[in-house]
Image (cartoon, rainbow, N blue to C red):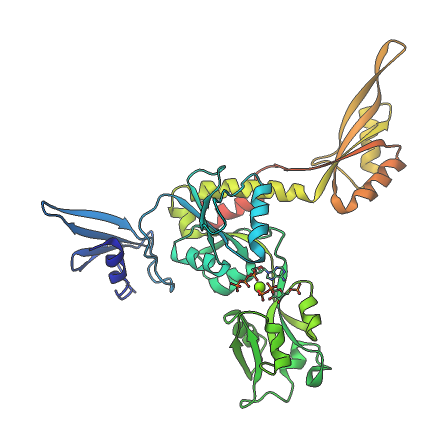
Length: 413
Ligand SMILES: Nc1ncnc2c1ncn2[C@@H]1O[C@H](COP(=O)(O)OP(=O)(O)OP(=O)(O)O)[C@@H](O)[C@H]1O
Ligand SMILES: O=P(O)(O)OC[C@H]1O[C@H](OP(=O)(O)OP(=O)(O)O)[C@H](O)[C@@H]1O
Ligand SMILES: [Mg+2]
């Protein structure tokens, strides 16, 4: 029997609700299955008949017993797998971010779904639809992924195997919100409470909400105490549904609000289910059990942190007159809002006068948030700064990132 055939046969097995600490063999025709409670894995021992001898082949099918998600049919693998969005608005931004972190993905052609990152050995990149990245993390077919919080929440359904390694990658920012028409019976409705208490909604005529978020939607309205609600599902252009008479309200992602505005819809107070942005997510099981996953995660996290810390800032160098480095440092610390990582770096700038080499100026180096660049230049000028040089910052590698410590704590490591 082929491994695939044997594996699909085993999918028919009832899941074991109770099992002992020791591996329990279940004999199934020519194969047997061992459950390992400690690792939550299923091992399949497939008996392959050959003309001369029968050989036992052990396959780790990475199947967690009883997590409620479909089981993986995959064969044993030693390589770490990272899932990235294959299409849509997250795809390009994700590749750009990785490139900026010196983790450029090498894809032979855009229709190929597997790729690698030359900087990370023993790691495969798999391009998948965002929702499939989450599903495959849960089935054990992927170990790591980058998707939106909305997708993790909708398709992960609170499963504890999913861990946010980095919860703010600073792109794909949007919110999942209820929106209603600006006109008609909704004209004066501006909050969830008002929507909930509208007399129009009855058992026979419930509030009809259309959404692609069929897990988060019903959960949210239940938490908000709405009684008469009926959900329908659609994949795109939801904003058209109220005007078409298909729905009363929609639950969809909003970013700039343009699509809502252009379709005469509005958000309401208390109607935001969640705020989302791209995140780096991992399977807890994979982090703990698959060789190389924790190491790859560490390296990716360090690079992401260092890049994201740096990307919002400039390095600013300016020359200041002063009689000593301490005097200049004091002036910067007292009279400006800007520092370096720990404090300003102050270095003497030497010039030769009357045959004598002396510090004439002092160069200060500080980090400045991009948005405050002009403000920093003005503050430096006020205290006698001149020759201001501004350069982009590529990375800030500080001490161990707090997110790494947090991850190890979550894993009890
Ligand atoms: N308007 C938006 N602005 C910013 N980010 C968004 C916006 N819409 C969606 N996103 C983010 O991008 C992710 C992918 O959205 P996209 O529309 O590209 O794919 P999708 O709609 O999930 O794909 P599919 O077409 O398979 O349903 C979303 O899960 C969300 O995190
Ligand atoms: O507030 P805005 O900036 O206008 O963005 C919101 C729109 O973006 C998303 O759709 P997308 O463009 O991804 O198209 P889709 O419905 O095909 O996924 C979302 O579903 C909204 O329709
Ligand atoms: Mg979309």
